[in-house]
Image 1 (cartoon, rainbow, N blue to C red):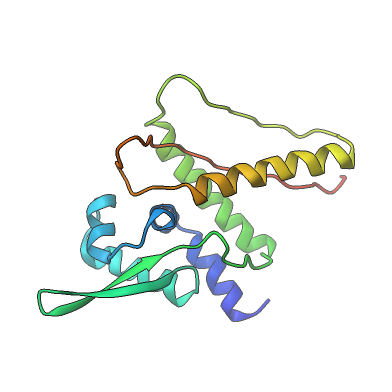
Image 2 (cartoon, rainbow, N blue to C red; image 1 turned 120 degrees about the vertical axis):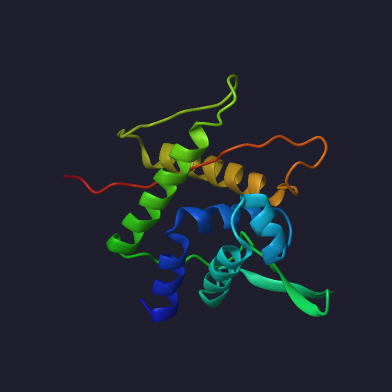
Length: 168
């Protein structure tokens, strides 16, 4: 694994940066917009955005002049190639995801949803079908993401960890 891949994995293994990646899926935003949306300081947002950009996880989609300066507009693409994580890097990602899920569950709206935790033995065919459906759902959510509070939208959580396990 190269330094760039390690850097990408470590950059994503932080709860605030995970929130930024989600936010930047819907539309390109400046550091000031990200700061307002996530209720963090502009300096904090800028720092984390630069780290995500330097790690290759987000792109600069454009720039705009604001009060004599230039503001970069960052965006995350679901089509970003995923590096192959080491066990250590993957554990950091899982910790960050777990932390984010704990933060989000406090805001869970009663009603429809799905909670699944399973360690099961299934046929290869069943596993492939389930994995395809989960992947389709994840891609759909990312591709249809809208700017925060867009009329006609609802705020949702989708946290997925689906993988084949080694026999113990």
